[in-house]
Length: 150
Image 1 (cartoon, rainbow, N blue to C red):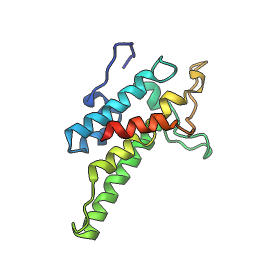
Image 2: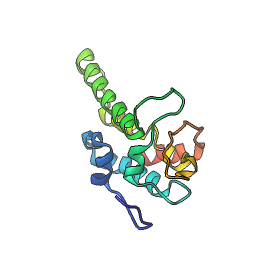
Image 3: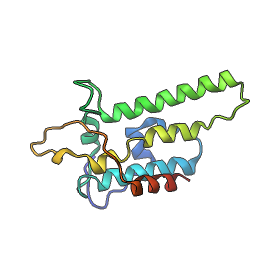
Image 4: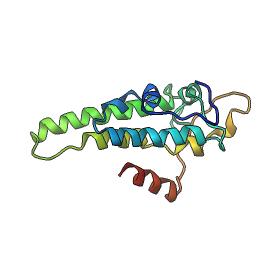
């Protein structure tokens, strides 16, 4: 996918990066998660945006040594882990305690949504991809994500 200023990615496009998005049953929540990722992808890198190929190529961390895992793979793994945990909790509690599966999946998919806009290591200066580091995301950005989900 190439980026243009007019590009808007909907649920179907974002699900190509994050297939677990389609496991969110509540359509409005699925759309809100996709909207957060659309903004992160299209406004990242000082407004230049990211391509899907660039996001798929970025390592998920520089802090844990040379781990062969990419950013998108990391988020997909987190979402799958949350789905598995929800299934275990449902069996363990025998439905006596409500498990908000949709929120678990959404939370996993949005956990690092602030990274692309904030962390593009000057941003492929020689087209060499580097990993993303956790930074303190501004309170305003996180508040906006939380408000958007509700």
